Length: 252
Ligand SMILES: [Zn+2]
Ligand SMILES: [Zn+2]
Image: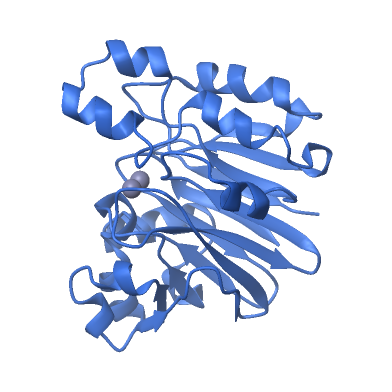
């Protein structure tokens, strides 16, 4: 199993996960053209995709989903609430994901984990394939015991480090937006993200990718400073870029 990112941040998110049998796109916050361009960079085309999974209906995650599914004719898996967005739930591409119930997509076990975020029925995903586990966790305002339990035993982790608390407080956002982003239904700050690793099996982590960084309220260096002390192997740590994403990472 291996994974890569087409881009990560408030301007658009999309992650690829593939095995010998299938290639899944998780979220698509980019236009069709942009998705094609970014996938080509990773040696893939949308026609290689088995399915699209959607975490929630914010435009940085869903914008390109239905256009891509229509053009390349593939199923879209998401919760009922997320499917309420646009025409998604009414389209024949939609497949219902029940949060908390694992399903099999092309041999990969996919667990949709409910998270606290200001969307209709948001989730994040834990994927398992041949005893290896990949956790994708962005867009949540706080770490619940349920989240902690599901992300404890990952071999690779893509983890939101949205903001630095001080930078957000002193930054350019209006008060209401600061409240939203920093609140329990907004986004994880660097310390919250680090706290997920407190009781995780960190020795097992081959890759930890810092993701969904705010361009205005965080820096990769600050996020790294928070996460690095939690890890056994600091070489495992890298960050996802809004424009470049990151290249394929193998989970051995
Ligand atoms: Zn987002
Ligand atoms: Zn969101």
